[in-house]
Image 1 (tube, rainbow, N blue to C red):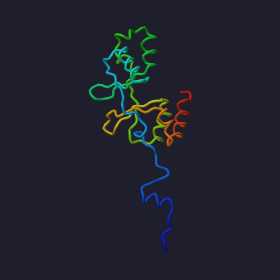
Image 2 (image 1 turned 30 degrees about the vertical axis):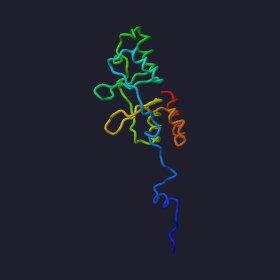
Image 3 (image 1 turned 90 degrees about the horizontal axis):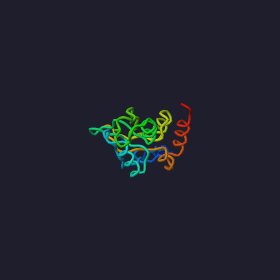
Image 4 (image 1 turned 90 degrees about the vertical axis):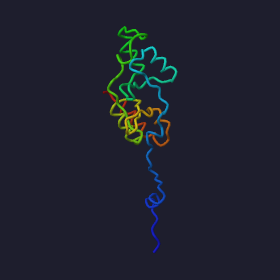
Length: 160
């Protein structure tokens, strides 16, 4: 009797699946500009302009120790009268770093972004080394992650 060929059997035979999940490493931006905690806010802002981004990971001794956003500079420094030319990044960065791993699925990424209510996350390898950054926009333009992007946006948009 001939074997019945089902979609599941075909998938098992050739390693292909219609439900293959997109991993973070497939859509993250790999070239990431990093700020030092001792950089001035002016230097960090210049790095943001050059990189065309609104957030910088802050690294020290080969470790991620914080995140600095353009909003941090405005709300925590400029609005408080601190001088961007002399104020160090460390004084206004967010030290509580939220991140994801490069081998996580976009389902996990969307769930984390929605829960944390963030639009960008640094991406680490399993040795906790920075390997990239991923944004809600990265998910939105990835055909295999559009539904996850919608779910993330819905969670991000909820009042906290």
